[in-house]
Picture 1 (cartoon, rainbow, N blue to C red):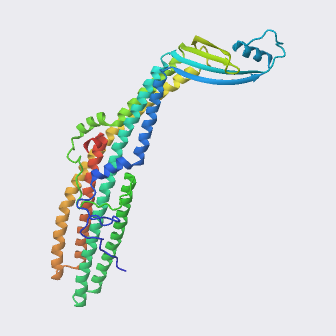
Picture 2: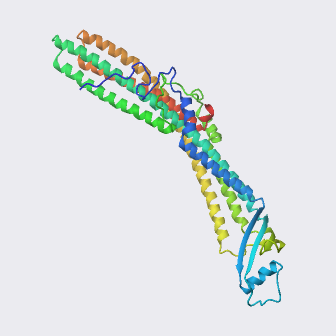
Picture 3: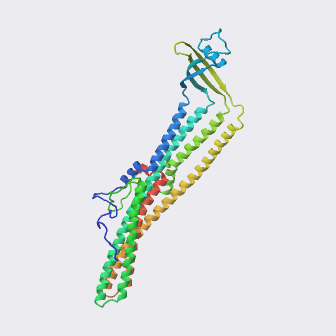
Length: 443
């Protein structure tokens, strides 16, 4: 059964997008990226991680402040010792009573306590520095994620345009083969062509119809991929007629310059450096466990049995504490923290190597895509001219049907290569800017 070869609007550039309104310009790449920045759940998760890291930083700062708290306790007893202490604190001690058989005594104890760590062996300072480095690492990780996400949106956007253009190419091929079939059928009816010519073109038409069905499905999938990356539905959006250039398309530099930019711009490098700083501070924090600590404590207490009579008192003191033996816990903490620093340094070396390879690969892919686009554009002109010539010759019965089908196949393949290459160039440009760490800066 013949396949419907018409798109929803043959002159429209958004042929397969559902529920599309009539828009003059269509969905731009910049609009898509801004929508992703606001809707992508991965960015929301990274923002929450920054909030968590900032909370850790605030907690580390709070360690420099004193603590002030109040407690209220109530007790009732006829225990000789406890009864004696309750009455003594309330200044109600009666020496005429039988201390071995006291009466039941109520006691309300209100205590206001002030605590402050005067010296912690610089543990607090190192904890603060580690938290600040961790917060900075979380912020830079978000920047790195934005750079990567922008590339993913750009890639999905241009893959969608690529799929749209491929669907158009396949539709044009079906229409062209259908025209050839009409010509061959007319000649067959006039006894100027054989049945095998008709069958050959019909087979070719079936192949092109199959390719059109596949292209339509790929276009639907491309819409779904873009919506997934953006994190929001795009129903009702139209696409621009031609493949637009990205804001960074004019920012292509030589390889060595791109490498130098990447070493200073990639947020992953800064995030890894901050993680190393945090780990180094963790080592110093562990070392602080060997040092003397000094705390100041002050209490104000009120004791009463009926809230009418009672007594108040205060206490103030300084506490010195030093870890003499802990079974090697402090030493183990230091070794663990030092191992983490070594691990992160090795990871940073690997990161630098990966970034350099990423830049080189992206640069070469861009050059390859640009060259293929030039060749594909030239091939279309040649294939179009060849097909026109063979069609004229076929009508004049100086070319056979096989030559015409071969020419049509060549033109169709050239159009596919051009549609593919146009999108590949823009994707490669985005990849180069992503590898340099500047993708979001160029928007």
